Length: 193
Image (cartoon, rainbow, N blue to C red; front, side, top):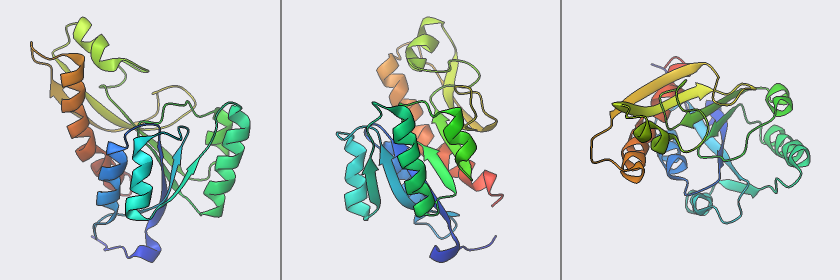
């Protein structure tokens, strides 16, 4: 297995909207010798996203874009991404849907982590829907982003058992813990490491 040094690691941007717990786990992963990525940019649509604090803590450039006009925001993000030579985008709790145009114009890979076993429960409120439908399992999926919501090629999945006493909040917590482990594994897998 090749050990990558800082200069030949894949420049990565992480897009967040909230607490940034997946961002934090990706930053820790990026600092490992075996990691193929280096996180150069944090992008958010939410100026109050708690995860932006990790930009300060780990000295990573962070930018907030207003999505009132989506196409303008996306053009600005693409400029920023090209300027920073980003080749991988990791969506980590980013609550905006990226347009076909953005996907077409980005010269790299876009990954997303989704809190269900896709193709089941695309979109929002995944935990609640799984519990209401009396599923035995839920979990999380890392997939490539294409122009259809939560429909890209699946890289890796992790199953989580739904217990009788699980609320959607409790299930969310269990799945999030698995997300933190799955995302780095999926990145290693797509770069064949």
